[in-house]
Amino acid sequence: MNSDEYEQQVADFFTKKGYKVELTPKSDYGVDVFASKNNEKIAIQVKMYGSGIRPINRQMIMELYGAM
Image (cartoon, rainbow, N blue to C red; front, side, top):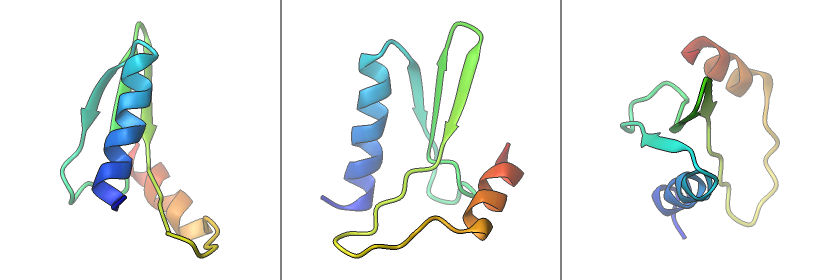
């Protein structure tokens, strides 16, 4: 599975939970999927690093926060 397929899998998960889902373009500054339901809106940053372990770092959090 590549990163685009993984983003789609995450989007499908939220769709099955009743959310309206929007995948963002590739130049999205960190947010990959928006999911909304009722008055709730979630910005999702999907990370897939393969078989290695690569923790989420401060820079990634700051980029996601900035995208809000």
